[in-house]
Length: 214
Image (cartoon, rainbow, N blue to C red; front, side, top):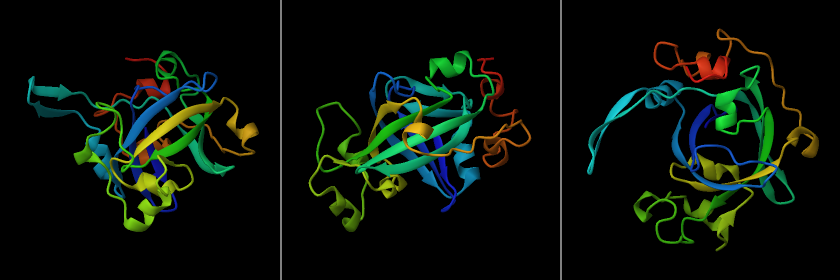
C-alpha cells in the first residue's frame, strides 16, 4: 500500500501483514509496518521493480515487479481521540477478482493505531528489536507509556513504525462526514503512472485498469 502526503510531498510504503485489507464489516484487526519513507517518487518506484535478492537458507531468490491493484484518494482524520484512515477507489472503474482477493472495496474506513516500540511484543510477533523505529524523544513521549498512539500521524514518517489497522466502516464518507473527491481516471492521467512512473514495461497494470490478474 503506497501513500502520499501531498502537503509534505512524502511517499510512504506500508506493508499489511495479511497481504490484504481488513474486512470492515467484521472489524478485522491486522498488523502492519512502514517499509519505506522517501520524498522521491523515483526512489519508491525503483523499490517496486523486479529484483533479485540473497537469502541465508534458500540462496538467491527472484521477486517479480509490483503490480498495482488499486488507486484512490484517502484522508486520515481524528475522531474521539482515534485516527481513522478512509479511502475511495478511483481505479479500476469496475473492481473484479484482484480487488476481491485483496479486499479492496470501493470505499472503506479503518481505525489506525501506532505501536509503541518500547512496549514489547509476544515472541515471534512483529518486527525484531533491531528493526524497531527510533522516534525522536519528543515524539516517543507522546506514547506516555501506552502500548499504542492513536492521535499523531507523524509516527508514520519513520521506517519500521508498526501499526494496527482495524476494519471500521464500509461507508466512511457518511460515517466520518468526509468528502473524498474520487475522479474517473485513465492510463494517461492516473497518479500512479504519472507520479510513480509505473510504466507498463516494468509493472503489469491490467489489475489496476481491468481488475484481472493477467
